[in-house]
Length: 207
Image (cartoon, rainbow, N blue to C red; front, side, top):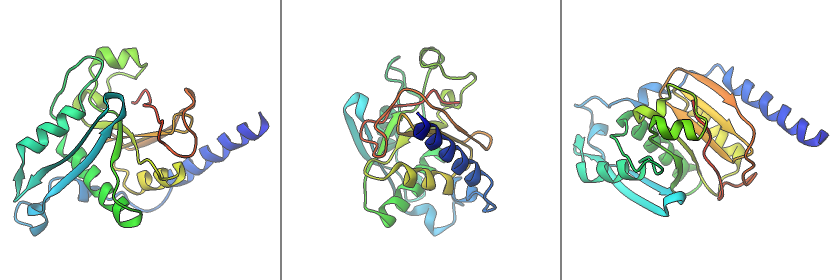
């Protein structure tokens, strides 16, 4: 018990230190690129798996300076509320954030999918999982996720580096939350997950 308590204290301390880091969030990179810039024309592809639905998608949602509707629909589909069977358009800013993070993962480690644990939620599902209300999950501006094969610490460092809004840390579930809401960070324990590697990670309640 003492070692577990110490582990939690150390992790909470590390999260607090990251939150107090002086480096400014890289928010400008995750909005819509200026339409005249060369980078606005580069294809943006996302690779996402959804273990609960046993689904995977690898889709280009943006290319030649415009939305690619077929790819965007495929991403909206995998982000759907699985319990309610409802989907909605997911924020392009969130997808752009995921794209930049996925590029960073491929460059630092190797190409791999983002494991999506929770995306869009209806209020009905949010209440069932004990989420707070109102939730940014309602607006398609949040997800719970992990990059399998990376340590939880590496996942956390990556999330903090690219944090633009909320960052939820769920150590026992082996998952993280990110959103486009106000900047904040929290740690929540419970519902023990897989520990260090995230193959069996679970979604959190979200905020």
